[in-house]
Length: 232
Length: 309
Image (cartoon, rainbow over all chains, first blue to last red; front, side):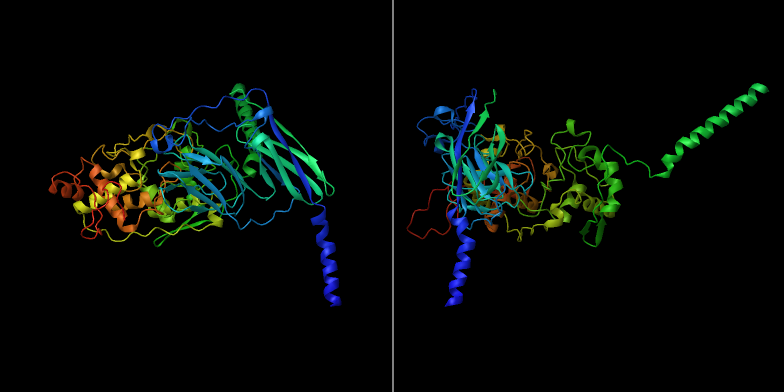
């Protein structure tokens, strides 16, 4: 009994700082200048998808919100955090209405990716990586999910060539500490033990930015990223 | 006389100066060919039947015959590359069109060996049938030094191709139903002329415009990039053509169905004499709508075009 008590005590000493002093880095991603206007997409060649959109959708290269907020920016810890193992849970990437939902996904190296076809038409899923093997698979309606993983960290452009307007991104990272800026451009990276971190923000068109942040205890550090909009 | 002596003296002096100048050059190895420093050569091998290829023996041939397009570093940026379409293969990423292995996996040594000997139709890659078997095997080994994938991964497991069943109008009909269902026509066009609704927008992985295969043009098989036998056609839609928009269908086409699709694809080669076109002619030149075989008596069969198993 005594030994087990002391074991628990030791375990508490070791584990508790990480639990009680979990810091958070959060903030907003915005842009300055005038972003390029997104182009409307005609799905006339694919009636089964066309009829799912009451108003024509546009390209999603730059998605903005109120107060100059910028969405679809992958914000992640690029240095300072442990390279945790890939989560057992898969990340799902859905094709619906001939669109990728979501437009950008992030996943850990080695983590399972499930590609789902929710449409009544065939898609081909063609990621174009630089440091991972390139593959290209057809997925007819009703086919089971395509299960794949990527061993090397990189930002991978993915296309459907049957429907050339379909374009998305796989952000393959070596960390589980990531967020993708959503509505209002906000992001939050919770559960960070004390330490010095490099936070990187990546946007498919505007590039990357980094900031150094030090977490000393149970605190929330606020950082913002601002990207300069490209003229074209 | 005095002049000629002086001349001789001068020539002698000149020769001496040249000799002194050339000393530091001859003291070291001759400079490497090309603008890039040669990376240390990996001890890569290839195995094609009984022939074993060695990277070190393939290097000279590569630099003489291949580097002009594929580049000294194997990155597809040789000095001719700017003028070529499609672009030369980039060996550093180890993505290859003609494989017997699943999409995303490395090809077998034999796949690369066959591509060298076959050439690549509609590209600037010629048929290298002037090389001996040993030279080709050595080149395959040398090509494998350019990507680290060859040290970390094995070649994929070649897809299995069973014996080809007899051609019947039924197999052609079922193949046509698959062509519709798998939406091959979206790129290749309803008559296989390469004019489907998505054809105009296609690009390869180097962002170069690329055309889907036109089955109807010409009458010979040599226009198939990866071999013109029936089993080569079977293989191509099962493996996909990596680096191009042509995906792999191996997850969704069953082995027997695949042969039916091959038989139908042959009928799209309207100018080619084939057993498939003979079978079509014998059936009156029309492909009947495909009907589910297993429909029990008394039930109406399902719609033809969307059929399948």
